[in-house]
Image (cartoon, helix red, strand yellow):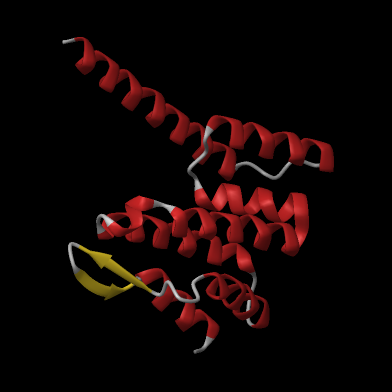
Length: 149
């Protein structure tokens, strides 16, 4: 009985947090650099999972370089995750984050450069082995398409 209460409370907290982050994304960006950095720190402390909001904050706080650096660190964490080789669900979850970040990456050559920078990290790890079956990582396929490869 007690674990059921904890699960429903956790679900409630995560739902409210996600709704608040969606509302923050709908608001205009903070006016000053200090406020943007404070917002990014608060989102990271809260464990924000709203990919577009995080991408917008990364880009505003650190420019294109800061945005790409945060994306690269997220790809490195994804590649190091043991869940990546347990089910395709983790790859699909990360692919949805990549698609949200792509909207912030810019257009044309900037998007291609961003995709190429992330593809470099996948070198030698382009496939997934799940239950003995080897398949292409959908994230690599998507980034390759963006990069024009």
